[in-house]
Image 1: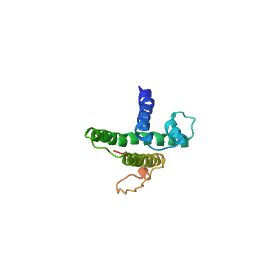
Image 2: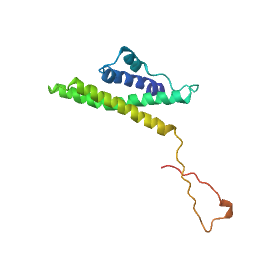
Image 3: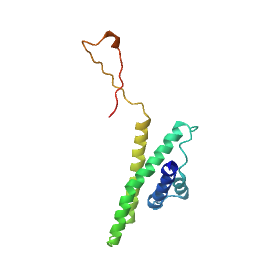
Image 4: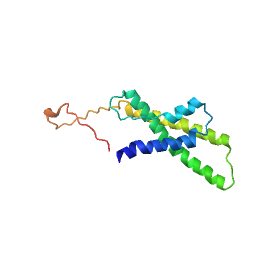
Length: 143
């Protein structure tokens, strides 16, 4: 079950992203090959953290790209059924913008995920607190 969720579904999403977004772009053979072959298994503990972050960035970008490009592609198909053609130049530009936005959002997400969180220290004074609790720390739970 987990293999289906974490390995097969992302590969299927990447295939759809490649067909819908990368293939219509005008790329060289090397660029097309690079866009098609990015992947791997980030769950290997021997990988350095940078490799895992890079894989997470690519994975998140692919998922965001699918989430953005699929509704646009459906809208273009519906417009085609209504005999309204969307120029190829516009679709390429929109898909390129989706790719840049997905890469930027996923990079920001990875950065926020791996950075050290901010810690706010607040000292509270109680008049009737026993001396044994002086300097006592309590971890705040996020709700």
